[in-house]
Image 1: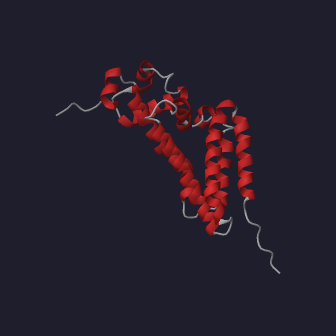
Image 2: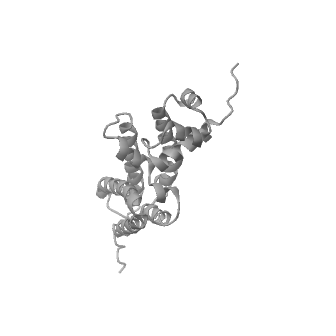
Image 3: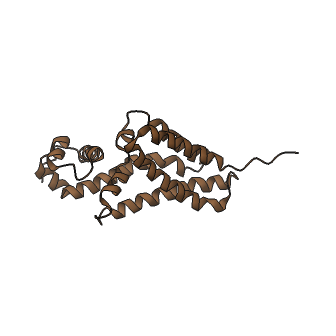
Length: 202
């Protein structure tokens, strides 16, 4: 019977995820990971296989624990156009506070910008993230169409537009969080402008 581990795998993964989030993949060394996680190189390799495999696990952790939470309301059965606008309004507030997303942006978008062009192992994760954004926006906009708030034939196009916009916002926040916050407010206003006018009662 093997000796029990003296560490919690989830804790190690979150610590590694946060370090990659702060510094990026290339700028994070194994020594940095040893210091942040409290595990030596041998234990890290034994648990995760390699630095790259640890990074891939960190991306999955980020998708499960950060992105899924961020997008959860879009996939609720009671989602409305306000839900979509509300996501950008929440981000606008976050970007004006000292949060991880305001300082470091989105780990998935950062990884895409840094690695996807030459790392075929990262590309599927990047595509999955893009598709998750599109499907989440499409789910919320479809509910809004069912409620008569917008035209149904605009849902697919607008879901793609919002996905591209959000990915751009994540890059903008790395340059200027306040500008990204202002952009999010503009997007929220634009989403609200999509609402059909209420029929006049006579």
